[in-house]
Length: 101
Picture (spheres, rainbow, N blue to C red):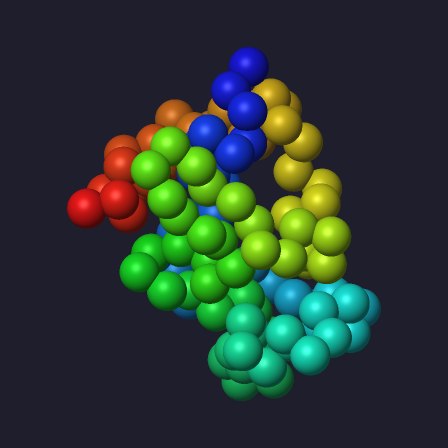
C-alpha cells in the first residue's frame, strides 16, 4: 500500500468545487479558513491552485497536507488503501507527477 505522503492523488482535481467544506470544517480551519477556502454561491470549498488543493505542499517525492490536523471531514473520511483511495490513485496518478514540473 502506497503511503499518503508519497501519493497525494486524492488532493488533485480540475474542479473548483472538489472538496466541500462544512461549517464545522470552516471553524476547525480557524485563521487559515479565509486563505484556503472559496465560496461558490453559498457553498464553501477548499481553494484549488495549480490543479490541487491549496493546502497541499508539493515537493519531489512528497505530498503533504499543511492542515492535516484541521482538514475537512471529507478528507478525514477517505481511508488509505480503501476502494475510493485506489480509484483516486488510478484516475489521477499522472497529475501528481505533472505538479512537479
